[in-house]
Structures are given as structure tokens and as C-alpha cells.
Length: 499
Ligand code: MN
Image (cartoon, rainbow, N blue to C red; front, side, top):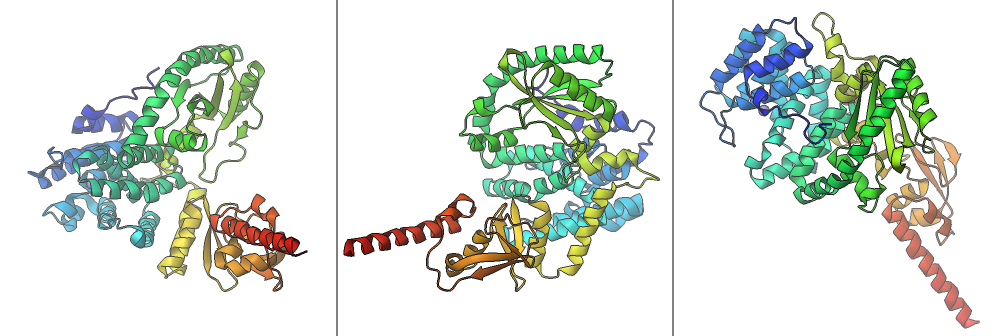
């Protein structure tokens, strides 16, 4: 298995022939003249310019276009990828691009140029940045794909930039780009962006994870080969015409986040390598999981049917974890080819199902984007707008409303108690009940984004309840409850001593 070295495409990436070869892998009948024209045009425009690395500038648009071809982009998008830095960095104007390449490519390059003028300047510019990203995406989602492809190459060559610039780009990638890639179901892009940004931001931690996983990975890898053979034989016996079975090592940043949850102990991580099985149809997915469970016992609570219940970003697969040969715990992911492309490239996977040159966006994504436009129209105010957007993009935070319409941000699964302490210590101390969306609710109810929460108080109440510590999520609530309880104990002791 070649999992340690997933292909070196540096050479191909740097030539127009390599680019065209890559496109013809998924679109052999296309006429590549427009790509060659865009390449010549960009090469002339950037003539004499150099990257920070000292390379001729054209290397960058070529690599961007190549990254787009890896996402199986359509020709106008790839042409726009080649031209994306022309209006910003050369004497050639956007009008000349329209004149030479027509309206569609013009509007893609224009979108990317406008987006490029935004520079991440920390949290205060964050809302504005997000808003512009979403507007661009709503206009034509392909602009965001070009931005991803551009960003991936910039991160790959980031060591030539000053350290503060490196940090800014890496933070922006983790805070804005990768959540959007995730929301669009583009798993491969998300992981690429995350690993590159992580490497830039925390090089020591990155190296630690990389060296930590080496030994267990190569140990498991040998075993995985055996397990793979057994699965292959069983599938053949049952006439399942699988398309491929391959081991997929966990990506570095995902592994890092999991390690932090598991006391930095790699032995507690069961899905260091997952075995991915691609089969022709949905029926075969279920038959295959049956065959696997017939051979090895599944771990409780680890069977997940994302085919019947897809993830919100459209991800579909069957997952299971089993006790396999030699006591090794192995995760399987079973899916069809179409599900696989969706998982890797999300909404971009639908590119080659296009009709008359137009990108056909699947309904659920189209609706999400429409929703964003609506939000954008309704919320002129940046702050409120940001809260609404985060509600969609950032899964681990929730946004709830006070009766006055203020938006309060809390961690996922927060309770009315967290909400009360967030607003005011007195409110936390005196809470006796809560109304969520006008319904009386118990104090341990998990709040959800969009809930309207009203706190009911008892003015005479002086101390919090110890039980609350079992379910509160915020540090503010925990600290206040504990200090409230300490005071109560002290008072009690004082009373006793007076008796
Ligand atoms: Mn660029």
C-alpha cells in the first residue's frame, strides 16, 4: 500500500501539458483550446514576475488550475484559475479578460479578484470577510472553489513568506475556509486545508503527530493487508463486485484533535487506518456490512448508517468498527462511487453531471445557498449577520436569543443555567425555571441554535444548586455555582459554631 506517499505530482503541476493530461482523465472529449489560450495569456501577463520562492509567477496559476482539475472542475473554472491573479497583479485589466474570454470566465475572475482584496485582519474584520465569501459563493459557487485551489497552493509554498503573514493566512484558513469546505461537503479539500494550516501554525505539534503515528501505523498496516485479503475473499464468495478496497490513514489534523481528547495516547485511537470499500450500488453496501459482521464482531455503538441518515453536509456511507484478526480494532467505511465523490469533493462532485455547461447543484446545497442569500438580505447589521452565519457554519457553538432579541453565543448543549449566568450572576443565582420558545422547560434542557430563552427567577433565592454542576457547560456558570456553594457551606458552619 502506498499510504505513506500519496503520489508526487509536483512535476505535472508545473506544466501546461501536465494540466491538460489531468483534465483529460475525467473529461477526455473536451476541447482544450480555451485552457491553452488562458495559459498563454496568463504567462504573458505575468512575464518577468517572480513568486516569493523565486519561481516564475506562472507556476502559481498553473498549480491552482491543477488543484481545480483534481476537483474535476469544468473548463471555464480551470481557465479562470489560470487567469485569477492577472487583474490584481499585472497591467492587464479585467475588461481585456472579458474581451478575450467572454462573460462566464470574466465573471469568475472578477469574483475571485474582489474576494482577493479582502485580507484577514483579525476578528474585527471576520464578519465582513465571511459575508463577502458567502455573497461570492451565492453568486457562483465556483468562485469559492478557485479560492480553495489558490489557497492550497499558497499554503504549500508558505515557507517563503514572513512569519506574521504565514500565521495570518493559516488562522484564516482554519477559521473561515475549512469550515466552509466542510459545510459544502468537500472532505478532501477540508483535510488538505487543515493539515497545511496546522503545519504552518504549530510545526512542533505537527511533527509530533507525524512521528507518533509512524510506528503504530506501519504495525497496523501489515495487519490491514491480511484483513483486506479476507474481506476480498468473502466479497468474491458472495458475488459482490467491489470496485476497490483500500486503507485510509487518518489525516494529521483530525488525528491531532482526537489525540488531545484521548490524553495524547495514540493507543486509544481505533481508527488510525480505516478500510474503505467502494461497491457498485446501495444494496451492495448493506450486503457488504452484513458479510463483515458475519466474520468479525462489531463494536457496540459504532455502526453508523449515513446512507439512510446522511450528515447535514450530504455525506453518505456505512461505518462500522470490528474486532478483526490479531485483536486489531478496524473501522470500515462502505460506500458507492457516487457517495465517494460526494464525500471527497462535495458540491464540486456534481460538476461533471452538468447540463449545457451549467453547474447543477444538488437540491440540498442549492437550498442552503439560497438560505444564505436570504440571511444576507435580512441582516444589514454585520454583528447579527455574523451570528446567523455562524449558526450554519460552526457546529460546536450555538446561538440563542434573549426576549429582547439579543443574540447570545454558547457552547453546544448548554442549558438555561449557562444562559442565565452568561447574562448576569444574579440571574444565575436566582433562577428557578426557564421558558424556551414560550414553553416551560426543565433547567437541564439542552438549548439549540435559534431558541428564544426566558429566565424565571425567585427573588428570595440566595444560593445555586449543587446538582447544576452535572450539566452546565460554560466555565462562567461552573465557577459561579462553586463559589456560591462555598459561601453557603461557610454560612452553615458559622451557624453551627454559634449553637
Ligand atoms: Mn493566487
